[in-house]
Length: 354
Ligand code: UDP
Image (cartoon, rainbow, N blue to C red):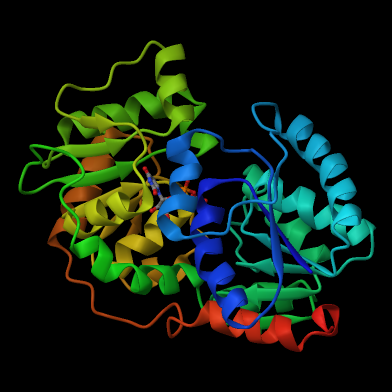
């Protein structure tokens, strides 16, 4: 029995590809939802749209500090893994749910498999970086999306690594036709727009940076469409900031609507990890509102430019440079069958043998 620990939006997207591949391989999986993301538009919509099997259990843990959430999840997941007689625990990405799942399993001597292993920003102030590093070090099977991730893991002396490609690329290919056939998710969209997402704590929890980002959106050469993450909405309100009138703001959208918007955007501005890659999958240049990125190959290939949100002028200049750029196609994230490779490796592993 494989037990997958999911809790946050990017994990649902990745699980869509992997859970499908596990079924195709005849591997039994139970999903445990930690409850980290709980709104319909941050959680349930992904299960509905992407055909992810319903969670066997929702732990309902969220809303606390990192320590509170991770601690409560660790305790709850330990009991669940014993009750479900887990043979292997599958974790995704870099959230508190990832860390709690990996720690609980490794303390019970249950093998841990980490999807999206080896990513590094080399910035330990990011909670995600701590989660990734610790998770990689207690994992037995590490599924790396890129060569760079493999190099990072080798440098840390970690064994059990497999270069499989990026499951998010599998997802992008799988839903391309369905997305194309959808109607516009927002009425009255301008012909040329920039799509933006902002939710990293380093941006949302600093009033000066958040104000600078909003000011850049006000001055942007193209109108901005902004599906607003609940944390960012909360912080904008608590700092007493105003969203410029020109910004088309909406609640977080479902995955298929998000990809629809990404495909039609002329440029994407984001601090999301997943959205940086999806911009590239859709052939759209990206500006990343951070000091560094884990997805360095996108910067090297000219698809992405880093712009720390220290000045509105710099962000506007980066938008203009991205709009004028003509990056060349590249193959950066595998062949679209990363999930199939993961399922094959799991099927061959002694942990899942009948
Ligand atoms: N996403 C979405 N709706 C939105 C914003 C993002 O479906 O309103 C999707 C996006 O397409 C990507 C994933 O959420 O697949 C990225 O998640 P997020 O940005 O929350 O996390 P990160 O990738 O930074 O860990």
